[in-house]
Image (cartoon, rainbow, N blue to C red):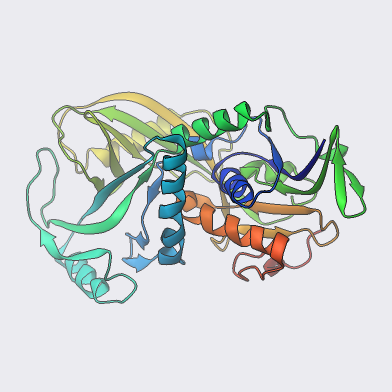
Length: 349
């Protein structure tokens, strides 16, 4: 069987690249073993502002300009709702933070998003002595539902295989590769933190950050916006909220921990006073890079192999942009963004 591309891994990166291929009439087949869960357990929030320092996210505006229509096209295709728009309310801890917010709102990159009015309205069960700063043009992508639906769609087309990919079975040919019964022009690896087991790209400086989240039921909490303080509280509807997230650089397992649950609940109760019930506790591993930029590019020796990885905590924003950039690089010779190109780390052995 001959295809243009083999995609290994189907989180947000793999999905975005698959859509790019399909939009351009390229044939492909996906290998997915469900070993990487970061996209499935992610909050899915898109937000172009770093709320800790009130600074712009790297390329945030450009990313959103591609991401919003990208998800709209998938909604239209599947006749499903994945993009849930809402504002983000940042709780101020002091008058100084209020002043920092006002200063940030004057900056051109931040002005479209930061509301200049301090929100003093009181919401039941939310401690907000100094009020809120409101961030607009934000929301979340329901990532697990989106990926499940997309995999189901690919399954109906018989172009997804639920099996582990064995890197040692790649056979290199002139301008192509052979893998089992498949012959392909290229393989694109979108393996998440599983990239460390990939013999061709394992030396890239990618780290794994475990994150744990809770889902709570809080019938007395009535907010239709995301609240950001020590943790975020994200509305899911019907009084259910997602609470997160932790960062753990040592634990590489997908096992939920009492320590993380305790940390999340202590932080939650520092600004939420209503009663609640924990109904779910999940964990995932985020693929992160030391310079907080994605890993995009082609192997130095084997030009048939490419990588699309390291999207970090903002995968829903970054994935559509870097997938398009990689597609244009591989098919039209366009230059990759030097801040994303894996060549910034030197030769890949």
